[in-house]
Amino acid sequence: MPTPRCKTPDSPPPHPATLPEMAAALPPPAALAQVGVVCTDPLRCAEADALAQRFGLPRWDAPPAAGYWLELNPTHLVLCNPDRHGGVWAEFVEGAAAHRRQFGGGKGQPVAKAVGLKGRETLDVVDATAGLGRDAFVLASLGATVRLVERSPVAAALLADALTRAQQHPDTAPIAARMTLIHAEAQDWLANLPAEARPEVVFLDPMFPEKGKQAAAAKKEMQAFQQVIGDDEDSDALLLAALAVATRRVTVKRPRLGRPLVGATPSLQLIGKSTRFDVYFSRT
Image (cartoon, rainbow, N blue to C red; front, side):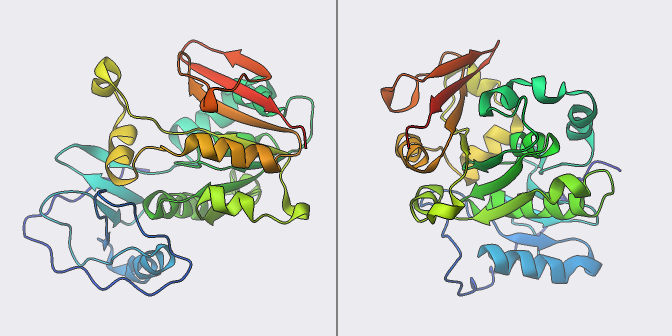
């Protein structure tokens, strides 16, 4: 399948449509770039309307002259800003996801060990900072049932598109069936979980500001997400919320040299070349 490309606008955008009134929609954080949904495939404009309504995003008739937009083309939903980087999208069927699914090392992969999946047939996991869903998909491909909680409407829309495509492909449909997308503020959502819905594991991968050389080398996904989603500055509080509900453990993915969240000492650490997993065993 060809790589989706963002159409560079050649005229100013129309005024964004009024945001739909949706009690469940979460407003984007202040000072972040506003992002609307644009459709470049006439056959998919009804889908674009539905995505915008579901996630409380504005529906634009054309891309803006500058800045970010979500573009629904014939194959993908893509986060675009040609002035900064190429398109960003979530992908579970092709490319790196397919390679990792086939050759990634199974339950011996670090993330599988970190959540306690090795030696188990299945596991109930909440990924409370879902992002583009890569780790969640790996865990689901190894048998875990994963609830992907994402507060950003932009990231949630990208995940919804990727899950739809995965559900329609025979190689990934059984995996996608074990993944459920929840558009919510994770800290509040965890605090309101009924006892019977508490997960065995909560997985966290907070996004932090990049500095110095790391900022210059940041991947395009990170550049885009920091502009339209922002950093997870409440990650310490999110860890405490996760520890209150996880019945087995909370696993936090961190840069290898990053500080532990909340300044607490993890029960266990799995340290790789650039990434570290801090594991906190549950006492509940």
